Image (tube, rainbow, N blue to C red; front, side, top):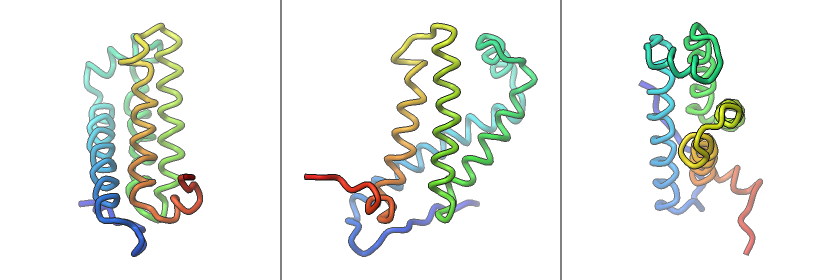
Length: 137
């Protein structure tokens, strides 16, 4: 089992740390589900890829790419790299939904929502990231 550890300093409030852990856990749960259904090559994935204009056989390949990015995100030493790569995956999904004219708020912007959760969870639990991108008052 993979555990999510934090790179929190003593200055990280407990509420912020737990909010980051919960947000990260939700992202990991969703992305794990999304990865697994692609890796086991479910018919719903094949149909979705066909609707998006991609060959149905690409499902396991996309799932493997997502799995690598997710594993990088889960481990603290590579979490920022994982977040960058998952953001790139979300960008591809956004572009795909834009191209076929899917609904904006539910389909197209879902990658933006997930990207915000990816970075938000990491930001809340990683003091080093907050030091690089401080919130100004």
